[in-house]
Image 1 (cartoon, helix red, strand yellow):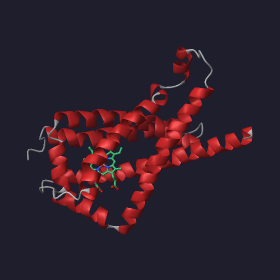
Image 2 (cartoon, rainbow, N blue to C red; image 1 turned 135 degrees about the vertical axis):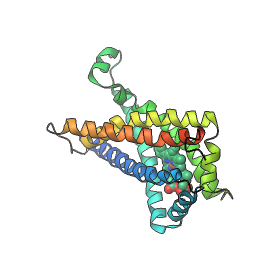
Image 3 (tube, helix red, strand yellow; image 1 turned 45 degrees about the vertical axis):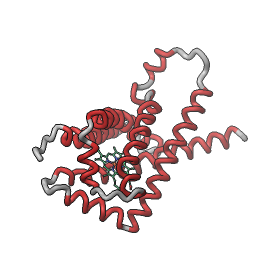
Image 4 (cartoon, rainbow, N blue to C red; image 1 turned 90 degrees about the horizontal axis):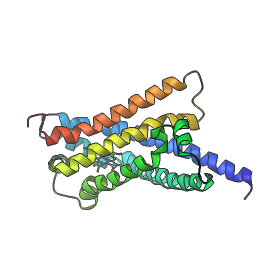
Length: 219
Ligand code: HEM
């Protein structure tokens, strides 16, 4: 394979990585909005209704396939890119030089991504598999309330959400750069917006297990 071809494949790969990443971020906004229904003091009625409406909607079911495809592509591509980077890096490259030229967040995308992957596997087992495959007789709200009674499960969620924030903190600005949507004039603003989004997602998602575990809504 010629160098040009390898180059163009890696550019396409970078684009797709960015597009799938931004699509997954858009999903997070929708998911966080759905989760806010857990805060209503209605015994979970609004939240259950929202989940039922989403699963019963044909368009949402199609988007769900795209979502799982995006997750899969994003993960496989990340593995391929990191193996390639590892092979391309000269031996004995000064470690302190690397940390001077890049942030902790960018150097640990593989680590934070791997923890998110483990979180996701457990998360889908708890909710998606339980309700959509095993068609549990419990309601979605009951599963949330039951799961978040367990300290280890809550701790895993909170740690994962902090790492999700770290992943998004670098991922969002990197995606805009990959797509050529960033330039010198507003690179700083994009970075700030990316960090704000990352913090909002981390605090937003982490709040639910904490609220349920400590019964902060007094239910
Ligand atoms: C603490 C916060 C969270 C709660 C309470 C929660 C709750 C739920 C529930 C009840 C479902 C089942 C809905 C269904 O089967 O359609 C679900 C599905 C899902 N969640 Fe979460 N979730 C949380 C955080 C997250 C995070 C941070 C991610 C991603 C990093 C995520 C990714 C997913 C995915 C991919 C699905 C399957 C989507 C689908 O079926 O269309 N969740 N979640």
